[in-house]
Length: 255
Length: 330
Ligand SMILES: Nc1ncnc2c1ncn2[C@@H]1O[C@H](COP(=O)(O)OP(=O)(O)O)[C@@H](O)[C@H]1O
Ligand SMILES: [Mg+2]
Image (cartoon, rainbow over all chains, first blue to last red):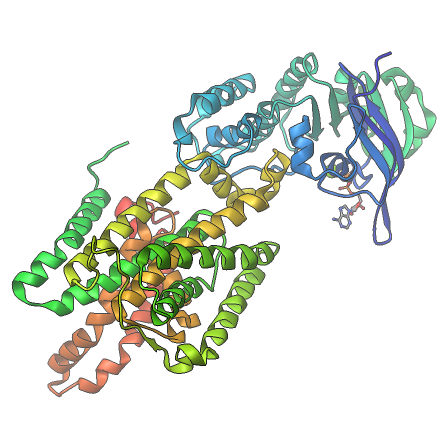
């Protein structure tokens, strides 16, 4: 089996009395979609935050492509190829959709201490941005101000920005949050496409989607990994059922 | 993109008017008008520079007048020491402004929102009191400057028409520079950081260094306005960088419209012309209404100006520029 691209070794994070990450070990291998599930408040977003460099773990190490990135700030990790999407949409609401993606393309072209040339019509920025919009099916909405777009479109745009960032690994935090059934199934189709191109760490609440997409699943409860393995193993795991089923029962059984 | 819009016509008319002020003044002998508009043009440069960080960068500095003072004091103190060449004075003034912006910006930009406003104000107050304590250069009373900047006989700043056009050209240069900057990749980063700094970090921009660079550029541009202002007045005093002056610059940008490069110019013209004419208007209207002499009412122009500003801020978020372009519902 290939070496892990992303490797997390025993990270812990506390917020006052809350243990949000409790000695987590996890990895993502090339070509793999690794899903993280767990009830609300299990610490999934906190984990993504530490991987993306927004939060510093209290202890433990994070390796990306063999390099210890634990102390690197978010922009450096992005430059190395870790792209994240946000559970709670975090876009440039006062900009047009295209501009949002253009901004995600821009760091790929090196530093931005260019004060003179007009960036509004630079093909090197616009073309990859349009391509990313097209991939998520938003090319016809390029000129719309993001504040005027629907929630579903925001979720698509989140994804377009992550792709445009030229990632080597995607960290996706509940890309399906708040989507209707139809939008959800389109998102699943899109993720299945992306999975062929990028290793993905997917945090998701939608069990059906997770079991459809994941090569590996890790279950997080109270910041602790209680189980990890292929979908069949997880489905059969009694502890997972006990800890997790209370909330998600039907989906879990049906899925 | 349409070019013939109400807004563009107003802007073009204003620029043409500004270009013609000296000609009208000279022909009519109304030198007061030229003095007033020289001042307006200079403060418009300061407002344009403030808007680069405030309107585009979301960095609301309440200490921008410090650069007017620093520019003026570097020029004034050098002139007093006998160094009258503008080729030395001006670059040095801008360099000192850059240094001040770099140091204070490096600290201020670690904070956000109200804290940023307060810390920029605090730094400006600090430099204000430094100027007050400079007994050698006039202290509280200020410093009279006997020689305007010399440019080896190429440009004669003591000629009022020449001086006006130097200021006007500087304003056009400032507008063009800011326009290039905000549309460049650098400008995209600045505006992105205003809109959503967290996302900017997460897509790979170390935004702090971009914002700091922007802060320094704006400080230098305002420093140039400071050099011009002290040249015009042949005088510099701590009052130049009083916090109310910083407030005036903010008002100019907000009144004119922070969303565009040219907005602050509209705001500077509107605010300073109103300041100049409101007292007359009040006493004339007051006199007509009451039939009595209303000379005393002149004192209350600020009471009229205040609510007018409030109305613009409340009902036209894009300022005058927003009203002209129809973006005022933003
Ligand atoms: N910035 C924070 N400050 C304090 N507590 C936090 C913070 N972020 C998350 N938490 C707490 O950490 C726990 C994990 O939260 P989170 O990672 O958002 O969970 P999930 O994404 O799995 O729903 C929760 O109890 C939450 O209240
Ligand atoms: Mg979460």
